[in-house]
Length: 338
Ligand code: DAH
Image (cartoon, rainbow, N blue to C red; front, top):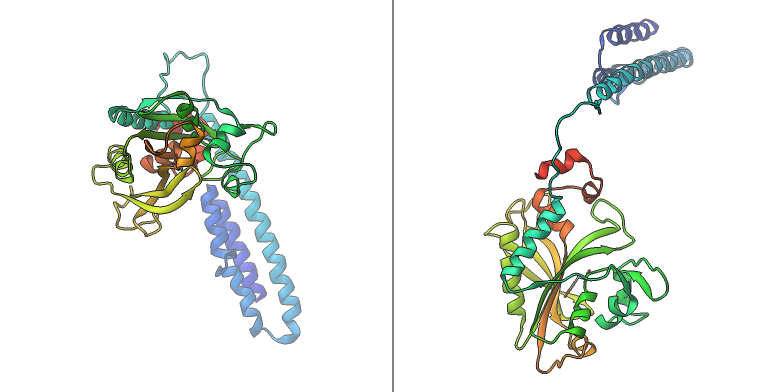
């Protein structure tokens, strides 16, 4: 056994001498010290050693293991440093060198936003923008969400003071518009919104588009038709749309809108978790309470509304796996969208 330990240590030494990259060293580590590595196997062989010697041999194996680990780590650090220096040298920028002007490109979010707005402009919608710093009144109360309403929990709000906040959605522009204009109203509202949320699919600042149409005789059928046109022009002609019942305080009935998966076309894949459908937006028939809050006769008029995240649509459209990529301004990421 003592001989075997020495042999393996020598073998690793020899291989390390010949190795020339971090990756090769990683392979050596796995081959010898991995779960089913050659050296790790020695410990398993310990049971065949005479009980009297087991202690001494076990100690030798462990000492050898520490030596191997140290040798491997040392070599690895050496090559890591070398590879890093090489990478830095290759990315070095000579700022005195004139390469002419670098022309920027439209950000993927802006690109998708403009395409979507074009679709709705074609359907007779006007584009409106509103304040990002909003009052509690417009962001919540006019939309049927009084103080203490449980629906406030759906949106983690950044408050500036008790009544002033960063808007959590573009929906306050629904009430702002209805309070200042008479039907017929057809608007789409793009803009930044804010929520205390931060992971691969949520950013504390993101972009939404709100839609509102208030006219006589508007029904869910009109909403579905508009959203089908939106889905087909944003993704592909074959994209399908389905409604699922949901709840929003400002719409009644409310729906969650799914589109057939943009990656597999509805067959089922990793992106749609095998269902063939992807949830993209919330919508519904404007709650008569909201119409009345905004001075619109709910017996005469009805409307539909919808709201969705532009970032999410851009991620689906371009297969971007992490929302944060769109906010890091890495030129190598951005120039793909030229
Ligand atoms: N404001 C909702 C949100 O940000 C989205 C939404 C749902 C907007 C339904 C609507 C709507 O206009 O009708 O979660």
